[in-house]
Amino acid sequence: GQQLNQSPQSMFIQEGEDVSMNCTSSSIFNTWLWYKQDPGEGPVLLIALYKAGELTSNGRLTAQFGITRKDSFLNISASIPSDVGIYFCAGPLYNNNDMRFGAGTRLTVKP
Amino acid sequence: NAGVTQTPKFRVLKTGQSMTLLCAQDMNHEYMYWYRQDPGMGLRLIHYSVGEGTTAKGEVPDGYNVSRLKKQNFLLGLESAAPSQTSVYFCATTSSDRTNYGYTFGSGTRLTVV
Image (cartoon, rainbow over all chains, first blue to last red; front, side, top):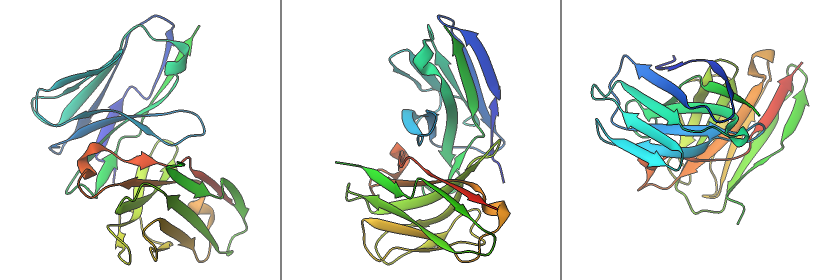
């Protein structure tokens, strides 16, 4: 069943605002991945995290691997309309072929 | 260089019909995966393959079969479609030495079973 809990489920923000979303689990993960899915497309990898406490940026995106290894956070600064989509967290539960995904955070950006 | 290509993109089936979804990749990746995406559920792993001629069950394998006769192709079959299999199906791939670096996904197949 679902192992990763993402919140919020959806967000409606104004262009230019910053966004924060998170992913938590009752299980420990050794890798955290963040994907973005555009409408009608498959998910695309945004950021990968491999060490507890790690903070990694990709342009306006910043993600952190929680110290407890049971959570991760994704921040988007100065949102723009093309940030619209569904953001998924993911991580391998038992092995790298057992990748689990959160239910996603749906982001809407109003111009 | 197409990456990961899924066919068909859309399909409507009647209950009890069968069909095969095709995933083709040109990246020479060893590992291939089939996921289904349902509203509020995220992506759930159906079956996967770690190489030509090998397959394994994922989290939700019931009602599906797979085959990996060629390295570049991974087929997902529904022998007798049920309305509960209405979903968006995604294929993903990765190389054997980069499984924890994230997957490359296809654009999906939207299947409706009526």
